[in-house]
Amino acid sequence: MATRLYNFNPGPAALPLEVLEEAKQTTVQYGGRGISIMEMSHRSKPVEQLVAESEQLLLELAGLPRNEYRALFMGGGASAQFAMLPLNLLTEGHAADYILSGSFSEKAHQEAQYIGEARIAASSKEEQWHRTPDVRGLNIQADAAYVHMTTNNTIEGSRFNTFPDTGNVPLIADMTSDLLSRELDYSRFSMIYAGAQKNLGPAGITAVIIRRDMLERCSKQIPLIWRYATYASNDSLYNTPPVHALYMTKLVLEWTKRQGGVPQLETVNRDKAALIYDVIDRSGGFYEGIIEKSDRSDMNVTWRLASKELEQLFVQESEQQGFEGLAGHRSVGGIRASAYNAVPRTACQALADFMADFQRRKG
Image (cartoon, rainbow, N blue to C red; front, side, top):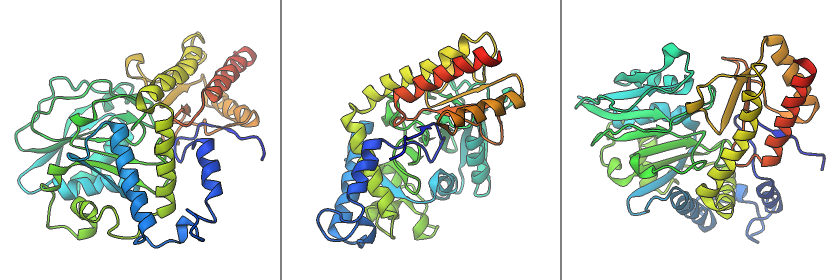
């Protein structure tokens, strides 16, 4: 096998090497059954067991009790959830409150507006998303169906470190780029959703963690395929799921547990991000961090250089040195290193060394 790249892609993102090796061994034959998991009926016992074990693992790693929460698996990515959430919960006579902290939270708010009244409860757009909005003392109106937030902003490189007290109003979060990356009180959220392609597995699976009582609130006036209750009552097997992506997700969840779970991964992630931020902060302005220090993400480290030409040269030389995925999102430019759970510390150290060398040569 050729030398693997230092993978800083924002998603689909790095997967643990040992997970890829394990999956390789079972691609042709799964569980000694003579066929692969991709060829099995989703009504078969092995697939039913796969779903059940994946749900149990995800809830266990999030520290949530099975008798109070369900973990559901579906397709469409977080983008589908932008619409599916208000379809289910933005019922007549209510409005939804959205906290805007970046591009994806703005897209979630936009989708909700097609379905019902969606208000902006807080926003940092006027600051060009350079920080997250202050959500302490958020004024939640009595008719709010839910409050929605994006806990980590993949494009901009920011995250929330404090969360609003919404009282009896459900707090719902898009955690696509930081679920299981840091210790949080996940029980504060009535629902969490996340595209798998950052920390949970490959693209193709979307995880939804929802409190059981929320299923009773969901609209019964929408098609069955869009109802959370449908996925819950059918154990995520109402229709044919992307079985292989789910299998890979289960392997990643098992790997996560073997690493020591969320507490240990958070320690490692903080150290990985610090290696890169330290070079930025010590560069004397050669590298300029985009996000206020208090709101910086450990998952998505973003920065700029003095010119677009220098940024392009940085990316070009990085690719020649075996780095992958460092160009910033096309909508904002700059440089971005996505150091998700599966990105090893050695990759972040190598990037820090490359950055220091690039500055010595071009600064």
